[in-house]
Length: 456
Ligand code: FAD
Ligand code: SF4
Image (cartoon, rainbow, N blue to C red; front, top):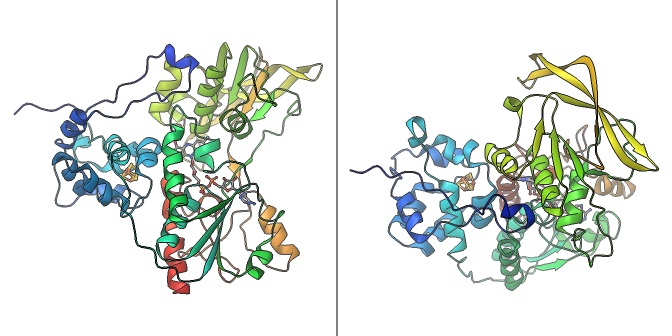
């Protein structure tokens, strides 16, 4: 029997894609999907399912793809994951479902993510008959967690309103992850589906400022689900961070993805220079670097204080970044940003070497006492984010004690309940594991289930 190789999605040309925001990877063709599905061994004890944070019934959906029943495959995935087109594109499958596939032990795992994306794009959610129960639920934030909770609560008959601080819906999927990884048509389709069901989405409302938790309760919302994400950037705390041309990765990505700051007609344009420095080595840093390439910086650098082996970003993202011309400089730790007339001109780094492993198990970078200064006209800081304290502070003013941990994340139990009665939380603002799209979506589902149980 001829061995079938793992199918690879077609990728947009490396040079061409440097100047556009179109999807880098194409979806599988039907032939590729069928070939890839036929690689699945349909194991009796499917480990892949255990690797998925929401336990998508992977072998079952793949068998339906093999049989050509794409709609049925989509229905199987949507039993646990309402966003297959999104997760198929952004899940770190190599650490989740695909890492557990037995084919991966000696060869290459089944391309579960690419199959899920194919199914998501070529099937539709089943219409559910909604019987209104007369109870109102407020959802704070329209990201993965908010969308999935809204979907399940609406199906259960609740009158659901999402309050979103920004003027666009989708959270990180809209303002963070660039369209060349997640085309906006995919996101728009999911949001349209929610609106068609009757979920009300009110934009430009900052809960904690425009309206408080107490006011929402007074307005008759029986339950509130807080899923406001963790969008507050961490900066380096070094000299020169206030110069023009210094951005947090979130600000930079938001300005491009949401405000279209790279387009000539925008009222808030981006001043694109020649050399951009991205500080950090995670997925967000890769997104920022690849976006900087596309908006027109001639040279884009990723500066990281450890070596390539310790880069936390997905291997695929690193490969894509390199293919697009991003230059990596390892063992560089930021010391100071140097300015001229208020603008970034250069940046000073200390050269590091690797010492003993630290608490994370990775070898700790140690300064060598040697310094370099490199010219840049933009510095984009990508060192992680935390939750915004607006909601917690406003709750306090209303004598509501919303318990948070030292870093400001909302403390919840396994049902998503917070310290305030009838207030639930989940997703990046109250993480129970890694901050990923699928975990946020799972948190939304979990909270919806708990709300349905609590309110009947
Ligand atoms: P969010 O998506 O952050 O949504 C929260 C929403 O709440 C936002 O729309 C925000 O505007 C709104 N909000 C905030 N405060 C208020 C308020 N007071 N009132 C009203 N609304 C409010 N994960 C992956 O799995 N794969 C990836 O490839 C990946 N890439 C990423 C790339 C970037 C650039 C970033 C930043 C993150 C990435 N992640 C990735 C992480 C993942 O996207 C998040 O973990 C997930 O989307 C979080 O979903 P959420 O619903 O909890 O929050
Ligand atoms: Fe894999 Fe993510 Fe799909 Fe789960 S949701 S099967 S982890 S791609």
